[in-house]
Amino acid sequence: MAKGFEGAIFDVDGVLVDSPHERAWKDSLRELMETEWADIRDRTTWSDDRFTPQVYQQVMSGKPRAAGALAALEHFEVPDAKARVEVYGAHKQDMVIKLIEAGEFEAYPDALRFVLAVKAAGIPTAAASSSKNAGLFLRQIRLDTFAAQNGLSHDFVTPGLSLLDSFDADISGRDFAHGKPHPEIFLTGAAELGVAPEDCFVVEDAASGIEAAKAGRMSALGVARADDEALLAAARADLVVTSLDEIDVAALGRHVLAGRAS
Image 1 (cartoon, rainbow, N blue to C red):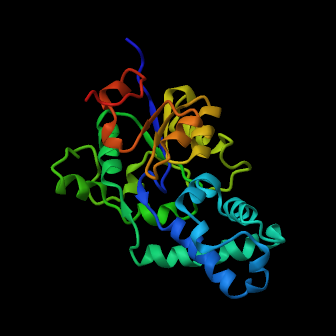
Image 2 (cartoon, rainbow, N blue to C red; image 1 turned 120 degrees about the vertical axis):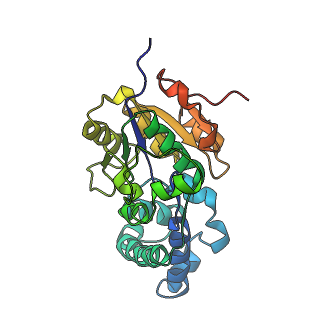
């Protein structure tokens, strides 16, 4: 029999939680353009309606804070973009923390069901997000409470612990030498799970994350929550779904990413 997957590595923002990062990036840039950067606004291609979900997904998603800030500023042709990265990144960080503390986010139910199913299948799990805020989200989510409320088996989940504590490894928010699409973050996740990269699958919502998984010789599962199936497929995802409820969990035991038969 074929050996099944021995490790599952989850991105956080956009995969496990509907985070306010996109909102914080967009609102922060608007505030800057309306205040201290008003003098250069007309020299850019920025407008609030041009900062779309598609721009966020294609330009910024999956990147560390500084890289994401620079990518956005260069996308909108902001003068002296590199010199403005620190201000933009700090402004966004202040805003996103306020939103998180105010509870302006939610966990995706399909993702929590999938995490429970993967854990029930005996596959070790890791959280691996470029965001330094990932732990703030995951500490506020109780996997055992979700399972109990939804009538799902959770005997293998330690009562009272957060979703963060439910992972076998957490490498989110570390300062790696290389950001996605380099595979360093996912290779580190596999190493900390004690699993060969080729025996892991990565769950991602960003093209850069899919590319990172494939560069690390891992299977890549794309979850398209922003009508971006084509973008994830073009990044060479092994399977693209719009909900993690679509996954055939039994196939993971055969080392296969597959959708459930309709």
